[in-house]
Length: 138
Image (cartoon, rainbow, N blue to C red; front, side, top):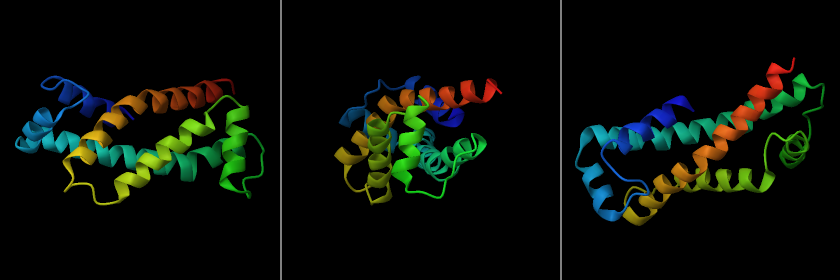
């Protein structure tokens, strides 16, 4: 999460977010800015994958819960614990799935992905903060 936030901070030194077509084209022509935007997309995807595949189950295991159940049940348990909002998590997952498809040839899709990650990074920060608070109780 730190690297995702840091990459956005670096882009914000030069560009106004949400990005528009003109600023996105400038990013494409600046290797450093392009590296930050690639890092944002990569880090978001890896973070979402790790949270969904490992972290959420680890929380339930730590709580003594059975994790051998459908993922939706795991999400519902986390929602009951005030860790996540299931609907928001599905939006995050859908964005991650959209990234998995080839978006680089479509400027509008790429701009939308970066802008949406920017919007939902606060939700990811909140989820991680909720997990941190839970861990600090023990």
